Image (cartoon, rainbow, N blue to C red; front, top):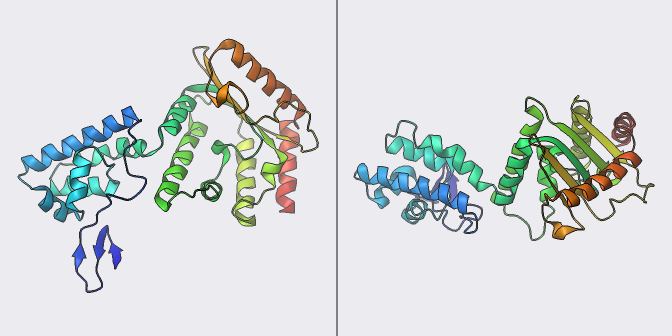
Length: 298
């Protein structure tokens, strides 16, 4: 059996509707209230338009190349429809693009809630301070590097879940295209530049990306040499996001339960630690030269 254009094709050439009811990565997270509301609204609109067209769920499923069970699950808000599902539904129901227009909202819902929440915060931030001690910050990762890194997770993501996580990470990088541009400061441990995640070629591409981003006027990348062990970042990563209204939110691995904090006293602790780390790291100019050296040796 093979699959062509979303339709399963048996060895005898017979087409069978595709049913993704059990495919991981497309189920609705019951704890994600906002996401569930979006999926429920889309499902309700699909059902109303199908019924207005006088089509039974089974006939509609055949028309768009999906199983009847999945049609019911989508309309009940229990499954997130794929972009191709919405495109075909739009065509079959003669919706004039109104159903297809919901693809963007549905696509955002596919990203985990915590990632969507982080992306919204980053989209508002006027300043970002980030120290990573184990892996490169997600905003700095190339798509290929991110895929290889996320692929090391155990238990492993399914192929669909991996696409979902990589897509979410890459989408956040629109922060580099914002205008006015936010001030972005990253401190990277030396080891994050040397570990060949995904192989030497992917690492070289990643180092080239760091050099490209590090030359942006609103971005500072600094490297913490491994020999400088006494800095206060040994407890894990630190991140602080500052907003235009003067408020801020931060997080660190080793304190406050790893949860985001906004209390001024807690934020001062994070900024103090980051300031010390930043002062002990190589300067931005020295860091770019260091990255170029690592690239040449890779």
